[in-house]
Image (cartoon, rainbow, N blue to C red):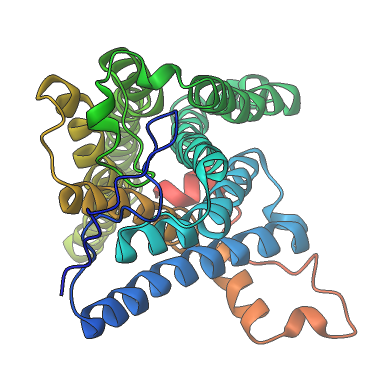
Length: 357
């Protein structure tokens, strides 16, 4: 049953819809309970998965690298989305109302934009780090020195904070939008054309194009390395049987396929979760804000879900992280003997290279 209280048209001076003027809720009580359970699972996955990454990096010294500094900061941003943004958005989505007042609505919207943007910018920094680690390893330590990593991390947090809190708290994102349109949403962020374009470029499209270019370059280098390894192995085993040569070629092809699969998952997950939202974010102002509330909520939660998947994509694919997670789950970190120097990987390769190959 739809919950519409349109008889009370109460708005404040900013045009923000009060809780007494609710938008239609999801329907029956059973539907609302089911949606609450489903969204709660997304929130819990986001918080638990990213908490595991943070614990692993802090506890195991082997995981403290330049690459994992970005992964750690990414997990912090995603964890903050799960604990400060998602719970309130869940109530707004299911109930169709905002019960927490207009001031907190602005704060919530600012945190939403800030942490989601920070998460995406961290993904682009991880791509840049892996580019130097795989494509130009001789200059990696210079390009990704602790000082430069620190600067990039600051950029990943300062830029989102500036582009979210200043425009939203000053309500610059509403300039030019008709007041009657603003009253149709219950703390659903509506933005004008200028802010939609600028924010989408900074938050998504520029990082997306950089990630596509960087990962394509990484894939080509990984493929070239696989071919070179194959050629060297063929020379070494030139006097051996054809069976050994065929086995070597098979191993080389497996490395290439694994690299392609890993990079495909990284880019595919990122585009699937965020491209629909940011496409609608730019198109909707030009259409006169015609996209309905249900569509927006689906797109918003699709984007949020990226924060629950990042630990799987950027950590669980890594052998060292998987062993660290198993250690944490088994509570071995509580054992009297410290495992901080425990060798997590059988491979001595760099963490960035391990994640690609």
